Amino acid sequence: MPSRKFADGEVVMGRWPGSVLYYEVQVTSYDDVAHLYIVKYKDGTELALKESDIRSQSFFKHRKSQSSSSSPSRRSSSRSRSRSPGRPAKGKRRSASQSREHKDDKKKTVQETSLALPVLVLFKPSENNTKRYNGEPESTEKNDTSCIILEQKLKPDLEIKRVLEQYSLRSRKDDKKKEEICSEKKTSVTVKPVEKLPTKTKELEFGGRIGTFMMIFLLPATVIYLLLMCKQEDPSLLNIPPLPPLESLWEGRVFGVFLLWFFLQAMFYLLPIGKVVEGLPLSNGRKLQYRINGFYAFILTTAAIGVLLYFQLELHYLYDHFMQFAVSATAFSLALSIYLYIRSLKAPEEELAPGGNSGYFIYDFFTGHELNPRIGSFDLKYFCELRPGLIGWVVINLAMLLAEMKIHNLSVPSLSMILVNSFQLLYVVDALWNEEAILTTMDITHDGFGFMLAFGDLVWVPFVYSLQAFYLVGHPTTITWPVAAAITVLNCIGYYIFRSANSQKNNFRRNPADPKLADLKFIPTATGKGLLVTGWWGFVRHPNYLGDIIMALAWSLPCGFNHILPYFYVIYFICLLVHREARDEHHCKQKYGLAWERYCQRVPYRIFPYIY
Ligand code: NDP
View (cartoon, helix red, strand yellow):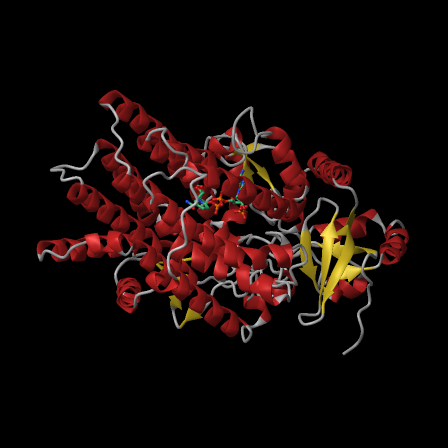
């Protein structure tokens, strides 16, 4: 195998995939396995390019001097092969003035283009390579994994147009005419998002190796601590609960019930009901298929619980053994994470998670080494994200409601308990109803499946998010109807922001041409994806987080103000989302470069308008 031609740090000219345009780029690294150069464009975009798509700068200097001597007629003859949609149909005669205007336009376009971009060189065809660079779409580009834009067939004129439009805002409503011109782009040109092939994770998150090592112990300890606190009569922060005997934390039967629950949900997931959809393209351009039947699983679970209650099964068992259930779920998620890590060692490089491929065992074990671990068509991460933990959370809440009625001898649950149960039920049902939306979230597209998500999905969500309901069983709180109404309004506001923001982004990502989104403006980016700058995503940079946090507050308020414990969720959630937002910003900055900076200038607040 010949050695690499370009060194790290070298400034060279990189071909923009699918086009004949060369930009100044800097080589940042080299992927020995895929034999690809990772290069950074001036706007911050990073791409993986093969060696044949890279030229030294001197190559162009040489070419420039050659092309300046070439006759205008030769230049126009090579351009005439491009079938720009703006050009008259073949055979149609152009007047001399039209032709002159056309030439002037072209010249202007090229001039503007070179003004709009730091360095842009049109690779002018020479006799030897006219065939290859004759302005026709390059058939070899299709399925060319070296440049990860698949099926891209941009013609030079269209490409220039796209580049010119790159940093200006467009409203699709005002742009009807342009859309017609670009209809060819819509029908025959499929611009897929540019993704990088997974390379080694260089920037470690969550405190790196030490941070992730500590979190593996700290997270389960926090769950146990919170549950012990909640069981106390006085759950104030300073009243540290005594540690229970270790043997009381484990019961085989409880673990058996947990396993039964997990496999029942797995069975529901495997049922051939519900539509099958494609996820976003992976780094190799492949799209995985996902069955959308979470809502059906929820209905079936509700029916199963109804039958059990009808036959006098005591859900109280869940309340009585709550801690043991949490410990069982922890043990299971740990075993699952070990399995996931072991199997990830055999996974091909391209299937590893962009964020969990550091080469450090602890870090990759925690963040998740493999992006989409599957057993056949059974997607372990996707299944765990929304099924056993999320549906389990609703069942736990119901068990708490029944426990409250039983312990306090109530004929109906307290108003506080009803609010907490209803709000959280709405949240879970919404997530399951909009299950498809999860396919565009960071958890699915970026994070691997390791301890962080396994523990988060199977332990943290069901056992920590149900803390308010658990708290209310031991600490009855009375609220008046007007207070309940005010809290309900708050929850509805939060839900409205959360849902509409998530739907807006999800619909835009799935179909940017959706007529429902015609009023929205967006900044085009070099990857082909746009960044919304009006609507919810023009209000703050993470409107969905804002809505989620408002709801989190509404879930805690029914517990009154006697203790801070029921507010743990909202406090933790703000920290989680602020950290998550920072992670996402970092990824977006890498993905979109200058376009992201423009977005940040235009939408200065991250989550809370005028505050943060
Ligand atoms: P988001 O749904 O917020 O997605 C972030 C991505 O959206 C970015 O990476 C980018 O991806 C895209 N994006 C960012 N800005 C724009 C824009 N202006 N226009 C278009 N696309 C944009 O990420 P999360 O996965 O963090 O959150 C999903 C939901 O889950 C949220 O509602 C959140 O509150 C909730 N959540 C709940 C948790 C819980 O425990 N209850 C935990 C975590 C999240 P790209 O450009 O690549 O498409």
